[in-house]
Image (cartoon, rainbow, N blue to C red; front, side, top):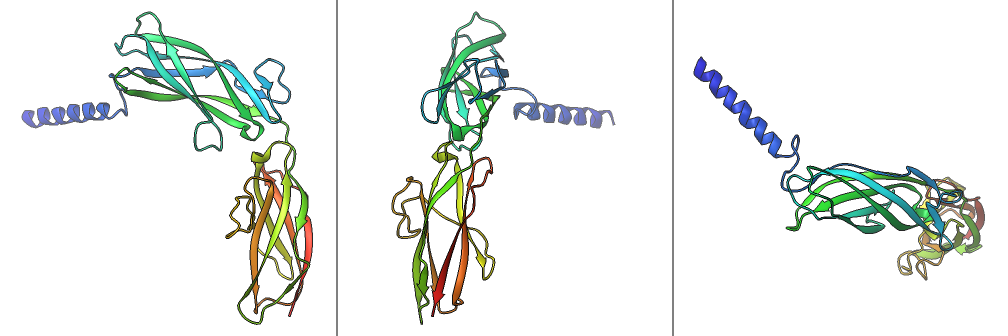
Length: 272
């Protein structure tokens, strides 16, 4: 019985050490370990800021100036320390910017750091921005990461649909299909990138789901001639099964905040 108790104790100790080595409890001691990171301000409104945190440098571009501070365990690794601070937007899949971090303190178990950050945001980047800090050793090992959040807010303007191009009459084919294209011009004073979705919906004679429109320059597939020019297009078709008569559709544009443009209606007639 005593031997069984010793064996169980050994197994439990071994399991505990293995769990520590996976990183679920103990940090990796071969690299510095970040403990904290924060900014000198947690929020800035790029339209109303007077503190110097936000400076307008273009039609929809703003330079953000903040200070980041934090602490990390050196884990016996001598200075200097190098790292990166990735500026990650709320909707971006890649960093908006990468900033080098340089720390050269006196040798200490717990190291404090502080550095000014300057990066550029556009109005469409407004939202929760993450400043992601990582350290790297001379051998290339990467530390854990830690976030310092910044909420960037702004006034918001709704997108505007300024022009619609669509046929007034479409002839229903006896066989096969008849192609035609809808195009709308859309603008947003908060910047082109603030336009999230442009679509049209048929409201009569029957209701349809919204159909997305594209500004991708793929004329063969979507009917759009030039990418990124603010003209959104969609090529559609009818066949012999479509109902003759008047058809009413309406166009909408939505921005990144969910604000919606005024609806623009268009009526066209399918003739047999």
